Image 1: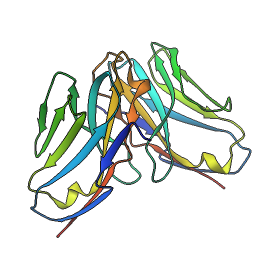
Image 2: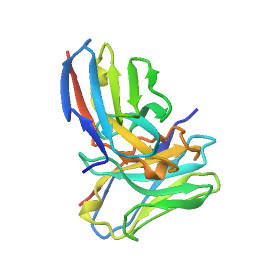
Image 3: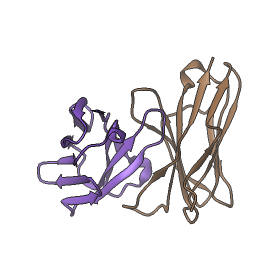
Length: 113
Length: 114
């Protein structure tokens, strides 16, 4: 069974550009959550999607958006990139049920220059 | 004040030794408490998940304990290996929350030296 896969693994963008990050959850998992982790800090929640609907949104500007597809994969989009958007972006996959494990992908390292 | 506090902030031990990491939380009520291992620049890997009614959970050389009365959890690593060098993060889910409400500690950075 494949784990949570994220692409790309590394990305370099310039300020003002936009970026799309992708995540494929574990087979059978219907919930995908996105996190931003700045070096030396814990992950900050950005979005959760369950059954293709947004179920939660963290304290991030509207430049951040996401969606979930019928196959439960997900995309995170960030527009008008800022230097401060440089971080490790993590995708977590779960069944969506309470008290179940959340499995993380290896992350996408985004560097904005 | 962070709702999930971990100690020590960093720890260095010799290969083969045991160690215990601490997590104190103020989140109440809560649904579950998780321990994750995170290598630098990689995604967190789940080690254990305990509901409020459980007081111990093992995963190989990792054993987590939970005292819901004192709001403390510990992660004990037995016979440490070089590959155990990582950040260990304690995460609490408030009751009736789901993954979106995970409250993360800042982690303990563990270095295992030969």
